[in-house]
Length: 142
Image: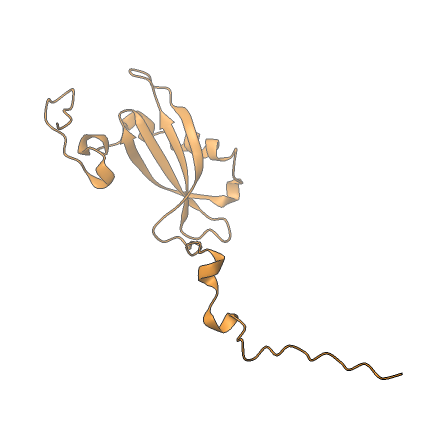
């Protein structure tokens, strides 16, 4: 059964990552304008010099917006600071729900973790022929 939006009565099709299209539309105008409060909330986890320019306001659902900022911290090229803002119906007051740091498509990430047994290369293993057990020394006759 397809989800139906309450306002239009139209069936919402699944968009990217299975999120209905109606949920990823235009961001809430009140929350999208709250750039400076979002930046101020990031100061609880980052230094001001590490928070770059505002990138975008992304809709996460009805009255929920994620504000994205460039990360200028050394070693985090391509990463983005985020602040999730929400508000109650008919309210003009934004509430900070979450803050953090996320990688973007341009981020440098560590390679996928591999167990030790899969990381060992053939040249790392000792060869049986190369390892020669030392011969015991003969004891002198007394």
